[in-house]
Length: 413
Image (tube, rainbow, N blue to C red; front, side, top):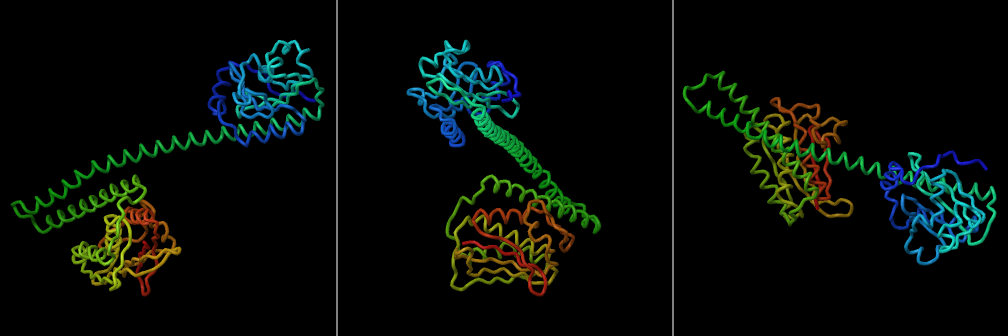
């Protein structure tokens, strides 16, 4: 049989020990993924004892065992004074022992006296980096001549155990990478939220200064008033974007809608209609509201759902032509067996391109269509709507309205 291509390694090799500790295998609980190999080894090689043994600089730990006598089957480790597996690591080759009592390396080993180890066959278990971590071994309490076929079988099984170790290492590496990326993402979010929060004050100051310019003598010329009006309008748009960024960051931190209660559908729509009324008047728009006379209610966070309706109505106003009608409605519906209400906001705007109907609800996606009066979406409001609706276990989407325009809808129960 060919010798194993690995080189022997010192038990106290710091790099080897680091890999062994980082693998999380030492002092870990038994696992079926390793136990199956000791069972197979014991059956195929007709061994009284089979071990998956990991060796550090002072002991051997049995990740899996079959047939160990008491109390070692419970302790699951021995000092190196009772270890044959250490020689697999030290020498980097399979250890084939017919009678340990006649082997000069092993004749004084405590395993002979206390565990009855006489014949031993051990194959190296390796890490991804090529470090020798321990061995898969077969043991009997009587002398035995291990055939080349038996040695090949155990070598193949040890290779499978090594592959299991490699999978464990890959999993730990991926978890570390994910944790690192999550930490970076959290730091980025915190920095963004701080920046957005700090931007609010200068934006609000611009609005106040614009009002002061208009109201303080001397009176501005028509052109100057137009410029100040544009300045104030831009600052208000910036403030709206900042406020929505702050809201969406809070929603992301919460993950779930927290304050749940019964909400009257008619009250919800009526409140939204009153709040949006000034904006609609300034854009020469009308609003129709329709809901069942019998009323009805849903369960959720009223503040968040109210904000969803306002976002959808504001979005409709942004893209609707002057003198058109925006429709706000709610009707009983069901989704996946759940009874609830389908809320709709219909407009007569340019509609949403087919290839943008899903992307439009993603954060910072502004879309290709520019609204009336040069207004363009910040790509925040609809992302917030989606987050709130999905936190309430609902569904949100957009459809083409008959005769032109869009229907933004969401279902809540």
